[in-house]
Image (cartoon, rainbow, N blue to C red):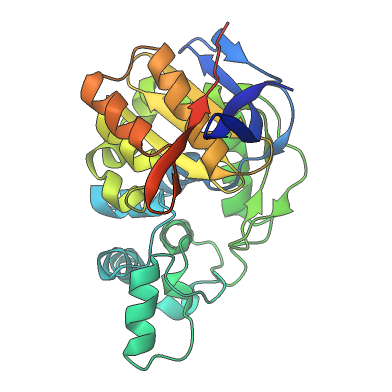
Length: 313
């Protein structure tokens, strides 16, 4: 298997992360790759930009900031919750309409703050995918669809989302599984995810989505997550997905997808940094800042690094 990166402490390799990378141009051609780019896995939250585009198709009217939260795996901070409520209120709905599982905020400090305030139960609106669900619900109201069953795979909302995702990814979608948030989720490959993100960065139909994600990366990704940093360091919009996955849309150039087969964010981050370096997307300062994320510590001091091993062909 192909290595994305290896963990080196005091000159000894402690761990290795295998994975795949694809870089696809706006015409769907693979211009660089590494590893098995056709192996199937679930697209998880990296598919949110395409689901949000489908919600807009069906009449959702969401501000750019709200759209960033709809594409997010957010931390449940007050600003995130406020935008989710705004999306729901525009549809005449309250948070009780959300079918995201009750959750504590993903941002640990925010979760601790709420516990310290005496809150004893998690809430659906704090779930990292509540923005996506709110946009889905607004689309249902705009189109006259039932809101009670909006997560059923055969619901007209989900049928349109499936069609939109298939169009963007460039292949038919298999029968869905259930994502962590309860929504249908589909199989993709590194090749097809990169194809979708190439379209996100070049297709005028996706310009509103790309702009929202690029302009408000702190709403899309929890600080200092790699999708937020990748967005800030080049003309891009990026979105991670669970189990070591990311898609990056470099505006007017190409789409990138990286998948760590062990599901680790650590391995995926090494792959992202190595890929961005090889593609010339980082200046000297950006390279140093990202490389600092790969430090391996012992006793409070740096004892080694996670070394990217990406070699695109």
